[in-house]
View 1: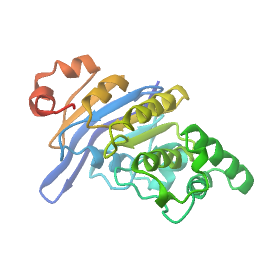
View 2: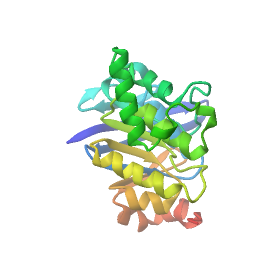
View 3: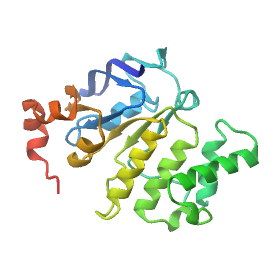
Length: 240
C-alpha cells in the first residue's frame, strides 16, 4: 500500500529551482533512501512534504489524503514525523522533558505522556540519560534524542535528515541498527544519507536527486548500475 505519493513537486527560490517536478512513491513498511550531492534539493524536498516550505506546484498524498498546503502541525498530527540535519533540542531541558513535549501532540494526560516518553527513550537506548539536560549529550546521543522526539508523535511515516552525519565512526553502527529497529516496529522511513554504504544497506528503494531534478528511482542495485547517478554522485563519493 502506498503511504506517500509525491507528484510533480516544485519549488523555486528566485531563479534557482530547488526542486523541479519531483515525483515518487513510498510503500508502507519500507525504507526509501534519498541521495544526491550537496545542493541537490534533498532537505528542501523534506521541507515541502512536511509543510515547512510552501511548494509552488505539485501534489503530496499521505494514505491517499491530499496534504499539499497543510501547515507542519497539521501534517504532524496526521502521523508524519521529521528529524532535522541541524539538531535543535531544548538544550536546558532534560531528555524526558524534550520527548514529553512531542508526546503532548497526541496525549494530553501528563502521566500517560510521561510514560510514553520513557518508553520511547528506552527504545532509543537513552533511558539512563533521561534526567540529563540535552546540552550534556554527545552528538550521537543528540541524534538519538532527535529521533525520540520525532517518534513521540507516534508517526506512521518518519522523514530523517542525515541521522549518521557529523558523528564519529564508532557511533554509526548503533544508529544504523536503530533505523532498522524503527522499521521493524512498523514505521515507514524516508531518509537522507550521504554514506552510500549505509544507504545501500538499509534501503528498499532509493531516490537520487541532482540540481533539483530526479535522476533515478529504483532498487539499490538499479541505482548502483545507473550511469547518470554514478557520474553525478557515486563516482565522486568517498565511502570511507
